[in-house]
Length: 260
Length: 260
Image 1 (cartoon, one colour):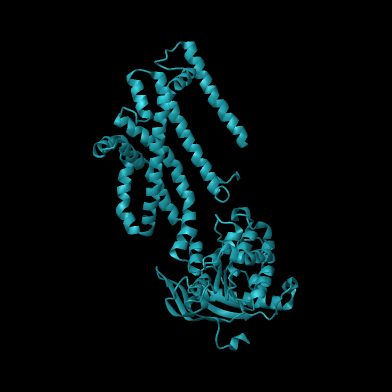
Image 2 (cartoon, rainbow over the protein chains, first blue to last red):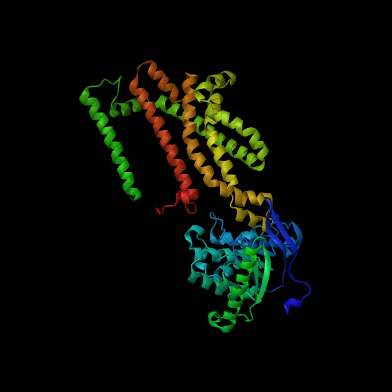
């Protein structure tokens, strides 16, 4: 069981984060994610879900507490990948050049990476759009390119900040299923921020429920369903049980937040 | 409207205006020293082509020389400002003073201080032309997408990689907008300064030809020189629009052909 593994890949211990005007973004958050685990962070807007990701990526520092993650270890190389809510592609660069970027920043040339990038573009279904600019792609295709860029370094840690929130429901369900396939190939530790119960349950093994003001983890719900998960999983008893448990936890968190 | 049709439309309007001018001058019997007909302007242009072409070449050299210096200076100072906000706060007022001082008013002083007339003209045109490039490029270098900046930090990009792969391409559309304005301004600066200098001799530009002709009431020759100035302005406008479309066309919304 990953829970008993003594050395998680990512760990937060009693982490607090305050921003300048006295806003308490996180208050005493502790969590651990192990190699190969897919964990979702679920909660309302403003509960500090994104802040957790930024701390794990080393883009922000905690005000108090301990954060340990591959991105914070010196000389670790590109072990951590980040998928933002917006596709965040360079508009002036082709799809190929965008996916090449993380390796290019490590000094790898076009010739070095071409087979790897092309294979990845094929996997995400963008082979025909290698030379297209982001402006020529649909929202779903841009997000596919963004995920391909995240996977090109074969990261140990994959951080995703509501990547599908802006997409329509059909595209979102398709990308959820595809994401699980891509994730299974490399099995990075995945931390996936969302405010959708359905998405959290479909994707992850464990859902951490967060509450706002101040941001903290209030419940953990396990989703007992092995991978690969077929589309029919959405109609199974396990799926609905997990959804109900999360609904209850969110409601409890909401009451707590308004009482505080 | 299709681009071809709009070209025909503007050509038709332009030719129509010229025809009205020609017809009006002939019908009203206006003397050539008051208002020459377009046909006479063309004849004068051909008759004095030798001296006009040499002057035109001189004006072109000053205009494009000043523009090249404005690009180099504007971009260099913008880069310094982008790297050091303190220097920007200290020096930006100086740039503003240069920008708001009417060039006609300072040109006589510059002509006193700078011995070579050509150098003085270059300096005047440069003062007029460099500000739009500077202010646009400063904004452009700052206008980097925050998520992309995080991405470059996550992958530990070097300062040089940040500049070449992120900041420079982000600033390019802003720089091009500045260049389009500065192109026209450098011509205005070159002509204005030469008007003030009132120089005579071989190494002089179209402004000197216009002054000469006005002293001798050779109105058709004034119009001939003016025609070349207008042609130069249109050429510059067309040149930089084409350059902008070529550089930004595939990816930037300012050059998008879609009309939605």
